[in-house]
Image (tube, rainbow, N blue to C red; front, side, top):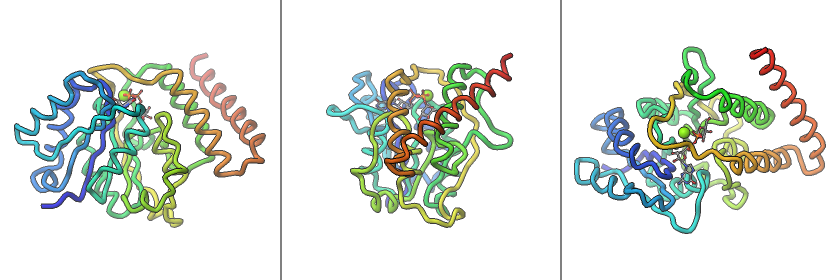
Length: 268
Ligand SMILES: Nc1nc2c(ncn2[C@@H]2O[C@H](COP(=O)(O)OP(=O)(O)O[C@H]3O[C@H](CO)[C@@H](O)[C@H](O)[C@@H]3O)[C@@H](O)[C@H]2O)c(=O)[nH]1
Ligand SMILES: [Mg+2]
C-alpha cells in the first residue's frame, strides 16, 4: 500500500523518546493506518544513538519509520520544513518528539485534514488544557507569545507545535518567503500559505491535552525567544506593510501591557 500520510518529528537529543513515540503512534493508527503512514524523525546530528534506535524499530516490525540526519543546518522550524519536503504523504502532521503531544490524537488530526487545508492541535478548548506541572514561567512566555500573534491569525493556538496541512498548499507557497528560524513554524505557515478564504475549509482545530516532558530537556532558549520577536516583526510587516512598523510596536506594547495586567491580577 502506498504512503498517503506522513508524521514529521523534529528531534534533537531525543533518543529515549523515539521508541515510545513510535509504538504509541502506530498503535493509535491501527492496522490499516499503519500501512499508509510514515513517521520521519528529522534529527540534527544528535549523535546520541537515535539512528540506532530507529534501525532497531525497523527490524522489529516498524518498517515505515525513518530518520533524516542533518549535518549542515540546525533548528526546529527548518527541520520541520525539511521533513515536509521529504515526506511522501499528501497529508502531513508535525509533532514534537517528547510526548507533550499525545500520539493518540494524530488520527483525529489526519481526519480533520481530509476536510481542511490546515489543522491545528489546540490547548485552548473546553475539556483540554495544559498539564498542571508545566512551569509558570513557560505559561507566561506562551500566553505573551500567543497574545502577540493574535492580529496575525484567527487560529486559537498558533504557538502549538502540533499541526498539519495538505501538502499541496506547501507546494503553492513561495518557499523563499518562509522564515525558517526559531520554533514557530505553524504561525509562519498559517500567516503565509495561500489557504482557502472560506474559514470552514481553511483551518480545523483538534483539542488536545498538552503534557509534560518526562525524558530529555526542552531546547527553548533566549535565542529562540529573540528569533520569535524577529519573526513577529517580519510577519506584521508582511501582513500590514513596511510602513506600519509603528503600528506593530504600538500593538506589541498594548498586548504586552494587557498580558502583564492579566498576569498580575492572577498572582496579586
Ligand atoms: N531537529 C531539531 N529538532 C529540534 C531542535 N530544537 C528543538 N527540536 C525538537 O523540537 C521539539 C520541541 O522542542 P522542545 O525543546 O520540547 O520545545 P518546548 O520548549 O517544549 O516547546 C514546544 O512547546 C511549544 C508550545 O508551548 C511549541 O510552540 C513548540 O513548537 C514546541 O512544540 C522536540 O521534539 C525537540 O527535540 C533543533 O534544533 N533541531
Ligand atoms: Mg517540549
